[in-house]
Every structure is written in C-alpha cells, then in structure tokens.
Length: 232
Image (cartoon, rainbow, N blue to C red):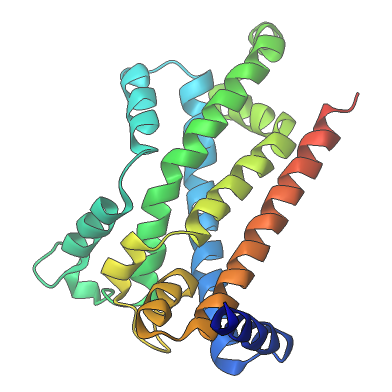
C-alpha cells in the first residue's frame, strides 16, 4: 500500500510539473486519436445518414454490416491493417507501418462503424419528424442528407465524442501497427501496458490519470450536450 501511495504521489508530481516524457506521450496520443476521429467523422456521418435516409441496393445489408463491425476485436483490425501496410501488402510501398499514420488508419477503421451506426440511428429518429416535409418539398438526396445532418448536429457531436472515447482507449490495434516505439509511436495506452510490465508505476499511473481525466471530460461534455438538446 505504501508503494502505491508513493507511486501515486510521484505520478501527480509528474503531471503537475508537465514531465517532458509524459507530455510527449500524451501529445502523440491526442494527435493520433483526434486525426482518426476527424477522418472517421468525415466518412461515418454521411455514411450513416445515407443508410438511414436514402434507398439504394444493399442498404439493409450495409446497416447490418455496420452494426456487426461495431464489435470488431481491435486486434483483428490491427492485424488486417498490418497486412495491408506490410511490405508484401498492397500499400506496403507507402512505408506507413510502425508510424503514427498506421495507428491513425487502424483507429479510423475501428471507429467509422461506431460513428456511422450511431449517426444512422439518430437520423432515423429525426426522419419521423422531417420525412414528410422533405418529400413534399422534393428535396434531392444530397440536400436531404445535409439538412438532416444539420438538424441533428448536437446529437451527432455526442456521437463523435463517443468515437473519440473509443479511439483514445484503444491499445490492441495500435500496438500491432505502431510497434510501441519510444518517441515515435508510443501512446498512452501502449505506454501504460509497457510501464506496468517494467514496474514503472509512477509513469503508468500518471498516464492512467490523464486518460481517466480525458474520459471524464468527454462524458461530462456529452452529458451537457444531451441536456442542452433535450431542453425545449
């Protein structure tokens, strides 16, 4: 118990003093996760809205596929991205394996189904109110999607926050494609696993506290947005 207390005290000191090693890992984690969320948002929101609001061949199959992919094991995603980016893979010539770009790609693949599926449900709920109006006004497919996404923007922002929470907590996929290389691809989750195995509890606890703080901030923001949109 005393060892834990000492490690916690050192961890808090590292956070308060903005320890260089700790901040470097946190900075890379945010860079990777935010970039992945931005890419997944650009793909997932229009995709989810299209599945909800438009009629096209394979629509139901795509909806089922998105729901199924929400539960994809991260290590499987990491393996698939690894094979695609390896020297013998179709994108090996790009030399992205064991770089932050590979980690961004893996996180994007993981969270696109989450954002798309949640966006689909949000837009479907909104269509109950807007479908007749959109039909009467003869709104085209593109304008239809833009209108629905705009009207649901606050709810969809909560969806994006859920995607960020999933990305920032990911360890399996980014470990496989990033390699957990110091100063290159080491992020908070992979560093926590490594430092714990090495017995460096202060660093592991420090990173864990930062990760928990991020998670708390995301949940508080999502809750505030939900309350705001629920008000008449």
